[in-house]
Each structure stands twice: as structure tokens, then as C-alpha cells.
Length: 123
Image (cartoon, rainbow, N blue to C red; front, top):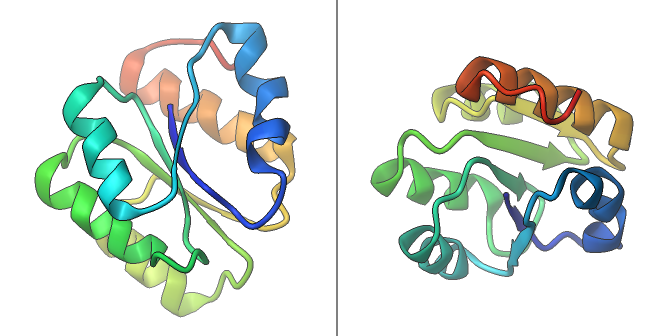
């Protein structure tokens, strides 16, 4: 799992979801770091803060150019029609409103992993 840095206690909050399932969480601070990780590791999902200063939609666009099959989940504090339209164009699996309800994130991860990998790891 690859996630972007968010402007809140993101890595700590994610531990409750990932650690019990033995899922590795890698955190990147920029689109460049995302690409470096994607080149070196097999990533099953990218979770991108779409509000980040490094441009979350731009990060997803860059991921799509080189790694079109990596599923993405977007996080946004301003979920509006424009954001949803752009996310749809970029084939983002889901956009979750911030502050993130971890139950909703886990449910979206469950749906994604069931569809993409036939796995119930997030059940």
C-alpha cells in the first residue's frame, strides 16, 4: 500500500487498518517519491491526498501514465463535482471526504481488494 502524506496524523491513523492485516504501508511526500516507490516495489493500491501541496490529481495522472493498473483511492476535503469528474477521468476507484472516516476507508479497501485481487483481507 502506498499513501501520500496528508496534513494530519495520517500514518498513525492507518496503523489500525494495516498492521493487523500485515499490510505494508509506504508513505510518499511527492509525486517523485511515489514514482520511485512504484519503480522499486509492487504496489497494490495508492491512496492519494488530493488536497496536498504536491498536487494529488497531478500525482494520480503521473501514476496513470506509467502504472495504469495500480488502483487509486483519493482523499479530499472539498469533494465537489469538479474533483469527482477529474477522479472519474483518471479512473480513481473511490474518493473519500476528509477528515477520513477510517471505517469508510476500510470498506472501500475491502471493495477494491475484492474486485481487483479477489481478496477479503480488509473484511
